[in-house]
Length: 292
Image 1 (tube, rainbow, N blue to C red):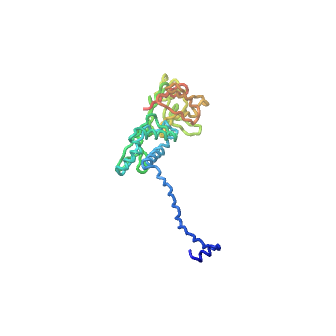
Image 2 (cartoon, rainbow, N blue to C red):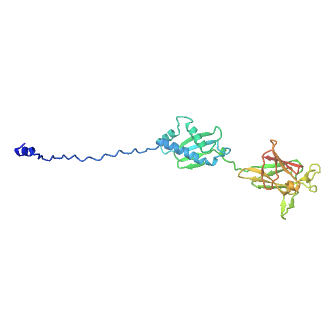
């Protein structure tokens, strides 16, 4: 230290300390937020398969009697790698696991399939077959035997008691879906229109009338009842016309094979018929309804 610096120090004059400058600190690097990878490819495809099937089966919610008993899942794959992903998605190595998961989710959506319903899946490389439902590369095939049968239901009426003009009347919905039943060929209704009967119960003066067979025919009204066919339901129903109601002094009943009975006593209301039903008209004439 020099003499001058010593004197300054003696009298309290100290040199200012140099302030060391700290190097500028670098901003703390931000920790990258984890990026959600979502479901793995197989998991994504499994979720998509489940949603596809459930969505296409929604029309069967709360209608177990119409639900299909078999499902064929069709999957279009562009290469072997994609097929491998779907095999993992379907738990191909764990038999029945995908079906169990599907059954659980169907139940959560109030879709109930019949007991022992079948699930199968097939891979396609060129194109999907003709499927019941289709979405992208997925198709759902409901076998024909589970689809509604739209073919017409043929039936016939045979007289068990009483005499009709014909021994049996054939009912063919492709030709006619409504059949008037009454005594005689025609009558004039209260509105003034002439009603023509398709199923004729003979009058005592009609040709071919047999007094013994047709002894109770007079109890049948000239405008007694009508048979109608519902193509959508493939169902025949019986409707009592004004002449076949208790208010007119007549009755119309349906005796079912199981012993139960329907009284057709509400105007305009259809009473479903089944094979083997016996239709009683006026308490005297009975017609047997049979499905071919």
